[in-house]
Image (tube, rainbow, N blue to C red; front, side, top):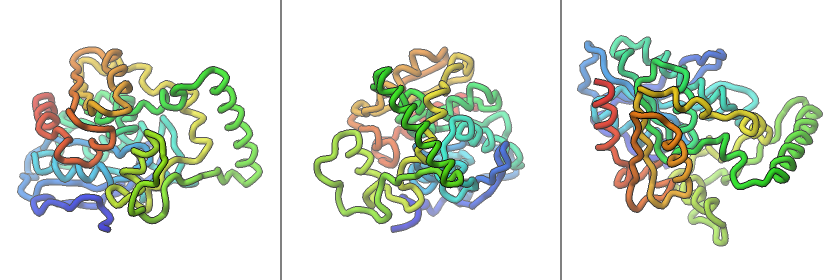
Length: 314
């Protein structure tokens, strides 16, 4: 299988780049441009973030490949501690760091002579949708934000749990911290998906676990650097911090929430939409489950996304 889950268009150029975030960690990214783009003029630009636990070679390459053909400079990236980006120990997740990665992308794009600093937007898939919104709350350089199949990981950390269950989770995490400390701060990491892709999804898996396997565990979306999950103690800050506590402060910059009609995660977008201020739009894709907006070009509404971005970055 190709390292990327979709083929690069013959009309698009992809360049590997590396740049630092605010914490000094070097991020690995891919910069996509149309081969016929006029680089003597400043262009509209977009940063695309991967689903939570994903890498740039998965969903982001699908979006970047398509949107570069539609006239955008597009940057995809591996979050710090993930993929080809820096950060030790590996597979650490943090609401602050993963939000910062989007602003680091703005830094990088704004230093390119062919990017218009006043026309930079962000697009987050799944968990990156929450991080993209969080970055936009505070980084006013981001002019517009799109989320697809958005997850708010701070809500997900407590999703469906009683107060007693949340307390038990905290106690288990506290016990794991002792174990990690005793191991020299080498935190526990338990991969969720197999090292090599499966031929089919195992029978008997409940939803949404089966859905994750329909993408990450089979050839459709499998990648050796995205085996699912993060270090066990990565859950600690998501139990403690609300990613979208300042969602209303994005206004008057526009938000487009894109969600599948059959997505198990639909309520994340609907609740965030209800809390956000105008201008905002909730766009529902027919006959689409959560993961369909990762890679299915017959479901991802690229015409809608293009129109939204161009009308708001003009």
